[in-house]
Length: 139
Length: 384
Image (cartoon, rainbow over all chains, first blue to last red; front, side, top):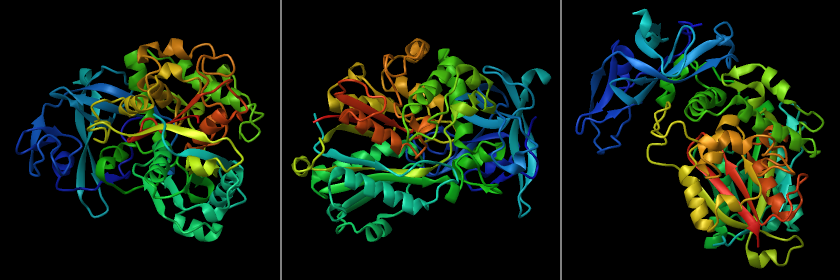
């Protein structure tokens, strides 16, 4: 169990999601006008309608809000990866921001977790850093 | 308040396990539409409108193949799932009520054997949009998405695995009385449910809709035309379709998570119909997965989420003695998964008195579509 194979898919990078997927930090999209945090990133701020954004780096701490253990591989490339655990993590700095990741080992709701970054390489050589999670007690 | 349009015909193709259909998806669509038009006592030339949701088989081709009249109205709803079934019926109602068309077919065809399985996913090397935040982690299929919602919902409200089982057991019990049902002759016990393998925790195999091939349709027209037809018409009492602000946030960031996206739909529906959930004697609740069915039950106002275990316990969702029989044809789980349009057909049959698990004296009959995906929809049928 744990993170999926390194050759599993990668996110397609856009201006909006590049900080999240390449910085190695919890760099959440922030509206340049009203400072609303938006996740996943969008092209228009839902709070004020602005269309320009920066990022705010949040503390690397979160709490498991929900999770599933996937037993059925929906694609044969994951046949050897099941069962794998996927957690939905609420960031402690901004609990309404929820982030998906894999976690090695058993999960439960309310579990304190911290991120680490898994490197994957796209077909064109672009390197992405995927946030993944581990129990905070291991720190 | 009654809607103006009425349902005068229902029909379906034969239902098959995935890959076993001897007809193409387009042929299945034509069969279901023909059967519904025949059932209404109409000629195909009278059909001048076609509506659906997420449908591949376009009216442009259907009308030519079937010999429909000159089309005056075609539309399908936004949103990527069975959540459009009730919405498609409201589109038909809107077209009839506004006078844009006189005879509208609402339908859905789905042959997963021909066109790919909903329970599997491609190996996308690059995921886009909100999927960029889930697919790289192995969250791709509806089962996995609804598992994440269901796990949190069970945690927040103390909903038990046995309550999920009640949804499945109702569908399977009802399917035993319906010869159209794929699970006809294949009963299921609670022990078999609990012993079945996990797909994505907390969803067992039997919590998940099957992959099937088939099509289903209804015919909607004006009350004036209906009076000239042989069958008693069924009123579209009210329909509702929509979502709340930020329901579409993506990657589990909707503020109401976990939600079936039916809070707003329920409020709209009851306000428009002038009735309340307690007035409803029978309901069809789209079972993509059991968890969203329970979420929809509470969001539609049948009970508080914390009361769900008691509400569904002891066969209370089962015909003939349960307090609210649901999915009385066997539903998506037991009859067939036609992206939920079978739920609509069965809701109409309950008003017509033609269900194989017929509730007595049905004045109002509810169909709720596609919980867990936004925008949700629901439609309430009733006696004219």
